[in-house]
Length: 488
Image 1 (spheres, rainbow, N blue to C red):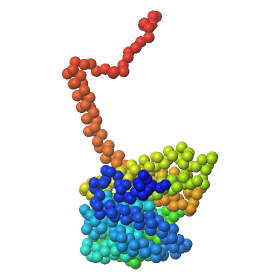
Image 2 (cartoon, rainbow, N blue to C red):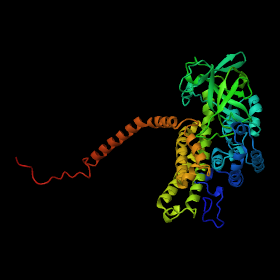
Image 3 (cartoon, helix red, strand yellow):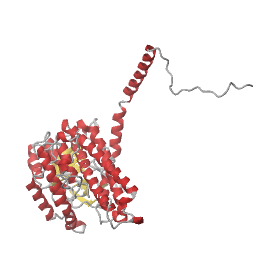
């Protein structure tokens, strides 16, 4: 019996009927129908296709980062026919999407998170989703025509380049990629640095590097969104950066290598180590305006963080499914009993259900907050789920792996690969520490006011005691002594 089966007469409970009660009033009839279609598409088409897609990528690095398996295009065709396309662009902020709210997409993204192929098959894959939101929100008409339209149609893919190996990129003010103005162009280049004899630095022959450049491995990637430092002398450190769209075939760009994620290459899109050497880009490619890079990046990363959380809830459900399947396998009988008959396993199952349901409610709450305002309006809620959900996912995958024993860390289940992704989620789009620091600082701002409130309540208590002719005393006070006073 899997999570889809319950007391219903026909067994299966459709996704539209399993929406938490607190979220149901915010979901349209159209979205309910689409949610069921997404569930069916993922379960019956995408998950069976995952292994086929991965095998079709090939074996060598060159093969895997040059491949585009036909099965992906076939899935995309089916998704378009079903109307499952570009669901991620929220209707209250963009006209280019499929017309769903963040909450409605959050429910759908949970199912996309169960499959390797589902997000790309529905044109809802990162980093394209975030990049499309940038072009839709901040792009000029020319930029939208050149890049947004092909991205929305699934004809091209895109990359996002921000992190640099030689600085602490979790603080984006440290970004060093130099953007020097030269007439109508920006020259993206590096500055000479010291080559460390032990660790690889961010410089090589005067060229500044970007790494963990998401999406650069795919030959279909035609544009990079790049954050660089265009005005290092600006006294406002948040006005020194600019985001610019760089065509991937611009001379001077070298994709040196692809980076593994705990041993997995994430081909063919992947994460690359990129060099810039006198890369010349026209100023018309600047997004929003010079010196507004922080504004662009914050506008991009907010929705991206909640998209990761939405998919992670689905991944956790998949891990629990594998866990339940394992403990109910009649062939597995340690110490004369099935795993499901051992109390420790049942406790882990119960904890997993509680944690998934709690995380889902937190994610949906954040989505509702965004729908009622924008990502800035929901900073606290987004930060909370960005920390909470990946940790929950890691824990549940770990429980499933433990149930499988050695098989859980092998290629025979998707759990090991899922574990690497879950761990990565605690770093991408801002590490846990940054969000915890932000949450702690903001929560602590209430401290002085709360101290004053508590003192005022104590004073009111003293006044009430006096009003009712009472003396303050501890109701548990005894003052009980044994015998009489000791004699010297």
